[in-house]
Length: 348
Image (cartoon, rainbow, N blue to C red; front, side, top):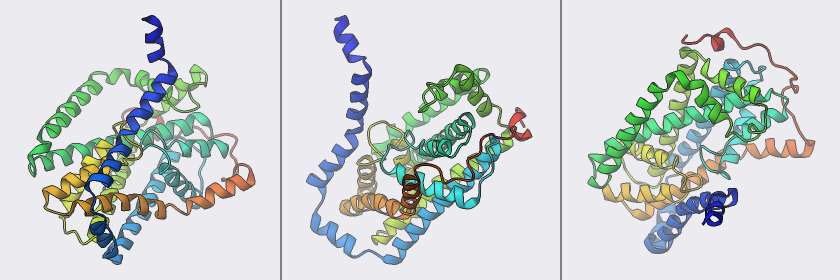
């Protein structure tokens, strides 16, 4: 019995279990493509696309990358990372967005952290910035997910219990965080230990990273949170433009609510980058609005296409680094200045 328990709890078994869960989304997509899609109608929907709306979706994708760039400029300032040109930050935003399409959403994109390390930035401060970015994205996704679930609960009854459950879970999580507010440093350290390449760092290094995260004042944190909310709203807008390009006339705020549920589902470890779960939610939402399920699946697949095309400039950044055998960043800084006053004042 002990041998069976050790086998089931071994790192290999856990890894297989994680990837087994992530296979659920692609399996759902395969089922939709085999059992639901009418390929004649799907072809007609794609052939009749409105190019103007498609270009608007592509422009929204570029806006997302631009907003991520501005957020990282603020993250550099907040954590005392040496300044970099706007062009450098934009190149890294394209490169990391491109990497996101090959890795799981939210959990994956620490690629920017690796690029910053390659360019000579201090690992603790780069890790703190990357960790905070993921926390802010998580918070934005949960916010949109709760709002979207509540809105859609009044549209079709099948999601009522989802909305109730999400609301209860969010209130409970908020209460837990408030109750543990005096242990934020320990919670941050627990998160840092899970970051790639940070688990092998000395314990004092992890303490330093956690300290930088929890010592941000409210003004800095609020500004970074605004960037994250704007990014999430731009993602919802991109989905709206894609849906309109398929000549489906859904209300903007309805699409935002649907995207909120999609964003929340992307936090669950049952897919890779939302593949399958996104299309399933769109099918339910389109069916509730008496729209074509084929158009719903087309919209989900176009999200991937628009994202991949919009982040193509990132190929240049990865290629130039591969050809150069390393950094082409802003001068390979060897040290970072002291943290700015804003980052060392608790409470703001």
